[in-house]
Amino acid sequence: MANKERKSAPAAVVTGAGQGIGRGIVLALAREGYDIAGIDIVFDPRNRKKGLFEVKEKVEKLGRRFLPIEGDIARLEDHDRMLDAAVAEFGAIDVLVNNAGVAPAKRVDILETAPESYDRLLGINARGPFFLTQNAARRMAARKGARPDAPPSIIFITSISAAVSSTSRAEYCVSKAALSMTATLFADALADKGINVYEVRPGIIATDMTAGVKDKYDRLIAGGLVPQGRWGLPEDVGRAVAALARGDLAFSTGAVVEVSGGMNIRRF
Image (cartoon, rainbow, N blue to C red):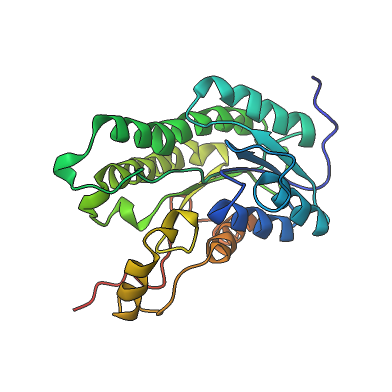
């Protein structure tokens, strides 16, 4: 399919866009004036209450365009199809947000971590984003200087678990640490190509992923684990991503922005 003529609005690709942090990121970018291609493994056009098509309606109410794309980032053979669809719809990709990720199906002690769970998390949380970024970066580099008002950027959503031990979900921590280094590597490699790369590191965020441990985290937050004294929200992460996409940290490629309510503060 031939690319459509480039529209005036910049375009973003967001993985895991159908719910949680991804949904918060999409809405924040839409408010910044971005058209968005949202990728998710769950794709149900009949469901307008939750998922990509609920997000599509919200984005369109904000006056922006939204392209829902079904895809699994762990399937490298899907990457061309997903990115080709975004380019065909919007003309180019200005921002890639690597947000999609999963937690272990069950939390177990590190001595009981199963190879199947380890491989699943590394495949989705680290391997998939690495090669999706590689693919998108080649496309962005080919357009260097084509849109000086909105230079391209790539944003990785990792976790405080990239640097904080949690031995009941070791494979998750390892996958996020790998993703953090992936962000650093691409920041280094792409700096001279005019593509900024950032890492956003959320803390305890209220999503479906954390719903099963809500009581535990309620107690920990009440006990002072989070200096700012509350759960994080998808909107908190979305605002950080929007600031990076907007260029507020334009001379800070490779920066790690923690959205954790102060959990990064070392305290007695």
